[in-house]
Image (cartoon, rainbow, N blue to C red; front, side, top):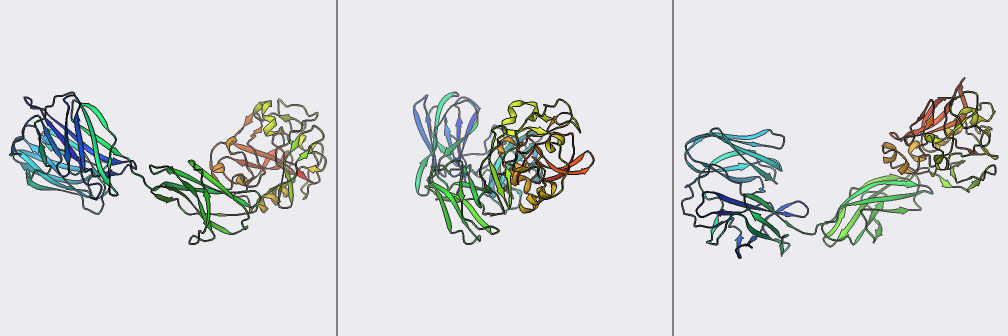
Length: 526
């Protein structure tokens, strides 16, 4: 099979009785966007019921008249399309000059930089230039003849050549012509089908039908199966020392996916464990269990079709300290049921507190009077996000405590207490520090504004499920973007410690808030 990227087939119609010349060029392109050399193109004039074929290496079909042997007899000044196109580093182009003229030619890259240039004086005739380009990209070739400028676009798919424009001489007939006497008129209904040899099989292109009224370039597209293009997505450790591996099929390769999955192991050279998924979708995943804490694992996503198997990049993950579900708890004061999570030696509520009791709903702030607030000023948010409490409501008359445990029941139900600053620190220390603790404690990705937090591979790995309820100050702020929690520990008068998680960072922030703020509450089991 001849190499791809080597040929442009051109069909030229010369109209009897007219000086106008219609040129149709054909470019073959595979379904993965690569260009290919066509063996032939079959042209059918539906209007006049005739069929003609261009067979490599013939690249021009002349219709409507006989072309003479003297190719230097010309009537139209300008540039012909280069041949071959696309080209592998080197190609040729014809420049037609009607009278002796000063000529300047420039080869420009996609950024508009001049890569090569030619200047000279040329006599009447068809002149041939050898063009070479250094990088694979689309180039613009300009020819300035007197006061006129002519341009063509060229596609280079090769590399390693120097950029150059070299004069090659007078009319070397760089594109061969096949002569026919079939009739043609402007506006005829034309049908084109290309053929290319792929892995020993002759494959037809999609059929293109159109009326021909002006010069044009027709892209004939061929379907060929390729190995799938696959992306390995960051893994997400979850609770119970498990991890979810994820992959994405970017391109099926032109044929159905028959299998996909993952290879993983404890080194990049020993990805021996295979997870096979028979049902493929654009994004696929699988959860592994029984992995060891503190070990770096390597993994890669793959997908298979009839052409073979494609692989993504090899990535890594580490199973860190995460939580496990505890027993659900029912608050007998109002019947609310809360899931719980065990993280280290602590047991936390896995939802924000929703208890209101006789605490009034606030319409203003206060350092002294206890108030609760609806998240984002909407009562329907309480079921998912809980209430927001100022520090007076959170403490329920208790004094500040920095102890671990705090010993402050506050607004929490019996058997539970409001965590101290030290207890929050114990939690973040168990999670390896504050750097990724925010992402580990956050949950319900779809409720958060997209950012570094939701993009983190640590997101939602503890089961704590912190939600972006925002906070209340003089107004309701950062709903969907921030989670704010109280502690039982005063920093200075009118200010108390707390923790916050924000959408643009994976960090668990240790911050100080004015006691009039409305913030969420998580209780810890005594």
